[in-house]
Length: 242
Image 1 (tube, rainbow, N blue to C red):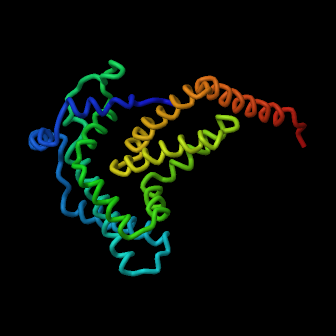
Image 2 (cartoon, rainbow, N blue to C red):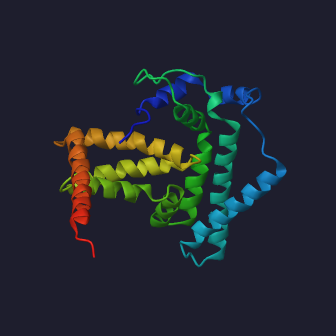
């Protein structure tokens, strides 16, 4: 799996800038372009619709809770959108990832910019959800934000790693759930996937230090997939024409 950056990228965020520095940068960065009133109204409408669809999927049958949760989700989505728009990658100075020595990519810089968002934004979302929903419902909403990447990635591990133990399942799932909760503060799938890569790296490291060899397992899996495709192609070509 491609790795966008190592888990210590957080060090880069801490050392390169602060929220206060961002406030200064956004005033002078040409990439920061305010939304027009028309664009904002359209975006707000789409966001409200998305929030309503997510809440409807919970079948709460409680109008007061539905209204509250829709407002919490919509507010969070709009805040993320606005922070992204006002803090593009260009607001983060070009530099290196201290864990690898490689130049920071555009994705790295965007993630750093978003990671400086006030913690209260995330706290307001999670507190609001948990005040109105049970934990299973909260997880369902987080899955909506991240298009089910926890389940999708766990299914991948089950295909790649033979006979996952209950303890391995527990650890891998816990890391992915941490990724999911962190990722809800990011705007698009490129950013969300970058956050998941941090925790997928943690999972690979866990497997490597607990009797598995991730590199060999992944190679064996991809080789098997290629062999299966080649066999299917050969069988199709060998089939006599009607």
